[in-house]
Amino acid sequence: MENTLSQRGYDQMIQLLKEALPEDNIMLESYYQTKKLVRSLGLPVEKIDCCNSGCMLYWGDDEDLTSCKFCGYEFKCRVGSRKRKLVPYKKMYYFPLIPRLRRLYASHTTVGDMRWHHEHIQEEGVMRHPSDSEAWKHFNENHSFFAAEPRNVRLGLCTNGFQPFGQLGRKYSSWPVIVTPYNLPPWMCMKEAYMFLTVIVPGPTNPKQKIDVFLQPLIKELTLLWEEGVEAFDISKKQNFQLRAALMWTINDFPTYSMLSGWSTAGKLACPYCMEEAQSLRLCHGGKTTWFDSHRMFLDQHHLFRKDRKNFLKGQTVKRLPPALRTGEEILNQISELGLRKVTEEDAQVVNSRL
Image (cartoon, rainbow, N blue to C red; front, side, top):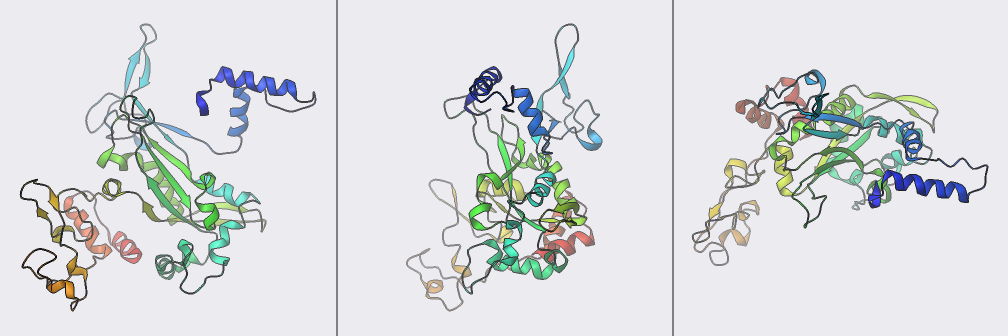
C-alpha cells in the first residue's frame, strides 16, 4: 500500500469516511472488501516460486519440482518446529497482459483511442508518434495480415533496476518490467495508467544474464498473441474480434540492453552493431577499453574526416567500410553455433522479415 499505511490504518480511515457520509451510502468497510472488489475487475496477479539463484521458475511443467534442476538448490525452506511448513525462498510477481489488453477494448474511454494510430492524419516529414516512423511502416509492409486489423496492438517493453530501500537502506536490486501499448495517441501512451507493470523480478541481486528466466510467462503470452491471438470484445462496435499483439521494440539503457539481447556490452566486443569487427583500443596508462576514432568508417568515402591525420589518431587515415548489416538468418545461425537454441527455418524467416 502507498504511504506505508497498514491494513488496520486503512480500515480505520474507511470506517471514518463511511460514518461521515449519509446513512444510505455504499462505501466499503474494510481492506478485505476493497481487495474483493478490485479482484472482480478480472486483472489477476500470479505469484510464481523461483530458484534462490534465479536458475529456473517452478512454473508450468516444473511446478511440482522440489529442487532446482540446474543448481540442485532446494525449492523451499522449512519453518516451524511442529508443522514444518514449507516456505519458498524467493517469489516473483507476474501480472498477465492479455486481460489488460482486453480491458482497453471493453471500456468506452479507451476503445476509440486504440485505433488512433491508424485513423490520425499523418503529415509529410513530421513524426509525432511511432506510427509515423519508417520502422512502423516497414513492419506493416512485411506483416500485412497483422496491419489489416487496426485493433491489433503494438507493444514496447522497458525494464531497469532500482533500489526500493533507497541509498541508505540495505542493498536490494528489484527489476520491474513494463509493457506499453503504442496504439494510443502520444498524450496517452506515456501516461502512468497505460504503462502496464507485468513482471517484478525479485532481488536482492541483479538478475544479469538470467533475466530471461523471469520473462518466461510474458514471452509465452506474447507468443500466443502473435501466433494465434485471443478473442476480445470491442464495445464500440458491439462485436468480438481476434486480438493480436506484436512486441515492436525495447527501451532501456546500454547495460540492460546486454541483459535483454544476450550480447555483452562490456569489453572489446561491446558494440552490438560491429560485433566481432569492433575497432576498440586499450588505453596505455589506464588500461580501459575505448572506441575513440572507431566512427570514421561510417562516414562517406570522400568525407574529409577520413583523411584527417591530426584531429583523430595521429598519422592515421581510414579507408575501411562499416560492417554489413546482418540478416536475421545470420544472427540465428550465431545463436545456433553457441548451442543456446536449435534454430529452425521458420525462426529464420520470422526474424529476417522483422529486420
